[in-house]
Image 1 (cartoon, rainbow, N blue to C red):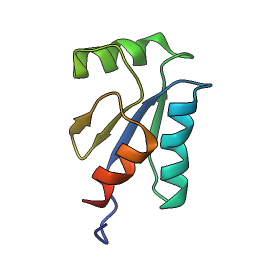
Image 2: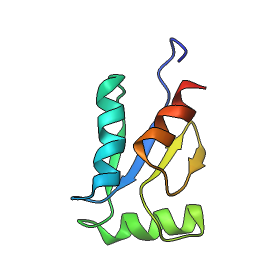
Image 3: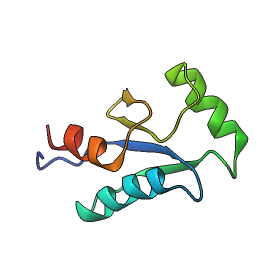
Image 4: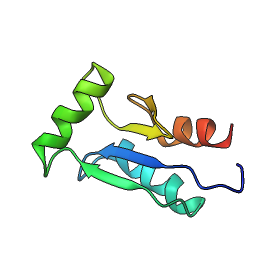
Length: 81
């Protein structure tokens, strides 16, 4: 990972193993991110679906590049690239 912190937005569910996996990766690397809970705020779900053209979460946007329907392991892999 580069020294510059990426701009990260994560579209996550309140209680979800996949979403918790993404949160764990953010904690592991001490990455600040904007969490958008698609359960508590339906507008975030709508925003996610418009950006990804699909309904599955979690979705993680890094520096403007969207990664739809990812696991924590997948998020870790593209963050390390």
